[in-house]
Image (cartoon, rainbow, N blue to C red; front, side, top):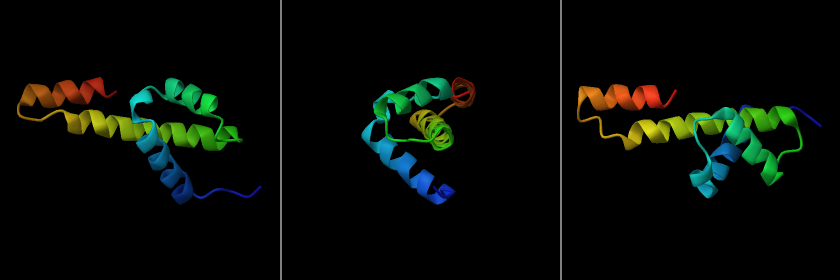
Amino acid sequence: MGKLSNKILRKKAKEIYELYSDNFSTDFVQNKKFLESLGIFSSKTSRNIVAGLLVKLATEKVLWSCKFNSYFCFFFCFFISF
């Protein structure tokens, strides 16, 4: 097997996130276990890369779901995402 490019893995992560967005969180280990249960990826490396990208997508969702109307809300959402 050849080396997969980041572009392909990012595209696959976005597709998976659109299908199963409720099942992913900002926890890397939980996302990795869910991807393992799906059985989409045969290699451990690509599964871990996609799990990391899903953490990034879930974090963006948490940050943008907050309205940022106040200073407190911004920092609350920022620290929850980590």
